[in-house]
Image (cartoon, rainbow, N blue to C red):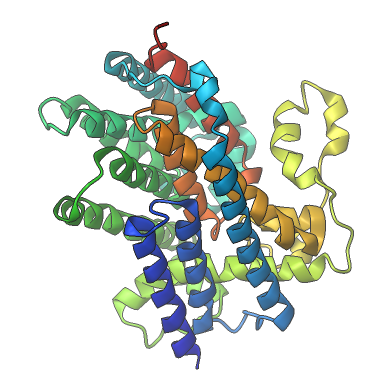
Length: 429
């Protein structure tokens, strides 16, 4: 029965993705979200770990409610923004000419800033996570030793790599013409891998794939040449980075299977390679299940978790904000080595079970507004990058709680600021 359910939801996911590519609601957040969450529901049906709690009827209903809420939020917002395209009345949101020379300058600036930050990170931390003897321990130690701003700027490749591909896709790729950007991307990718974080590389991968889809509008022949390469990169990153990290930290690449109590003795190499992907999806759903159960009997945070990115960033400068910081112990909710639980997790902490009813609808409305903004201004630097970023956000909703990570807000702030530098003002009639 479990195999049948797995096959059903994976097939449904593939159908929704097909609809995302060519259906009535082409390239909409609705079909991408449904595709991703069908996987999130289907993959745990394999029940590979002894630690996984069976989904209760209540949890099944709440997941269903969250998807219905997202669907409702999409259709309501779709109808509203089809009639009320407010951005058309805001001149600075409608700049269409991208000054490639300025964008190239910006990419080089980000590259050199990242080099300086990488040096500062190394001086303060003494090493990089992937090169450390124990990467898992070193990552947490480095976070304490290195200020957040240096950490963020050291990983600016997460920004300048997609923007480099923006130029390549905008102009049409030419190896000779774009050799400098290719070199920067290779250096930036290497630098990010040193942080032993698969999320950062996958972030770039998804942003680039979305930009290619939105800018180049590839046909089937072009897609077959482009997407398989990036999909292979995705799987390699999602699997290889944790395998290397765990091997260096624990002397075994099967560490993840061990702590999750997954019997891999009869697995072939490919199955073992896919274990981190299974754990990343299934155990994040487990974390959400644990949180939903936990906050039925414990006090909720009343919005403080959602404010954490801002209270953490500005708490030292404005001490009065510290009273709004959240207080909870993840070890009381689930195993201490779990640290993500889908995009809904922090909202369940803040609002309890009610989060399943209204948060997806709000998220859907925001994403739908970005979809309409991009559809009506398809040659706009800001709309292209914002909706590509939204694509990343949607895919990662089953993996982590990106809304409580300060880098999301820093990324978006940067995109808005850079927009004014790389695009021209509309000339008055």
